[in-house]
Length: 71
Image 1 (cartoon, rainbow, N blue to C red):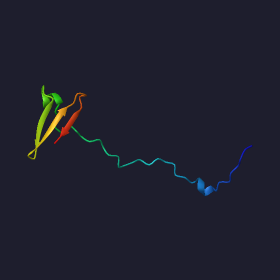
Image 2 (image 1 turned 45 degrees about the horizontal axis):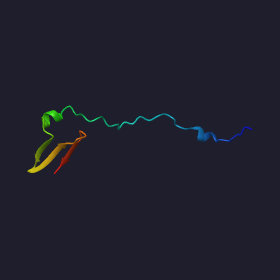
Image 3 (image 1 turned 90 degrees about the horizontal axis):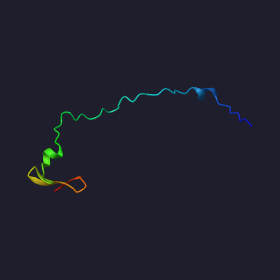
Image 4 (image 1 turned 135 degrees about the vertical axis):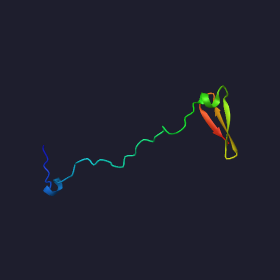
């Protein structure tokens, strides 16, 4: 049993072309930012103190090898 539909011809004028997104952000550039490995920063220690604007922050490596920054 085939169903037939009457579709007005003006509804067939659809623009199906894909529009290109011209505002696609480019990936951030990390090449101009200083990079330190944890080995460079910590050496053999598991904790370092970072002083920022006169305030001390503690950066620790956890047992699970994660980094935690606390004030």
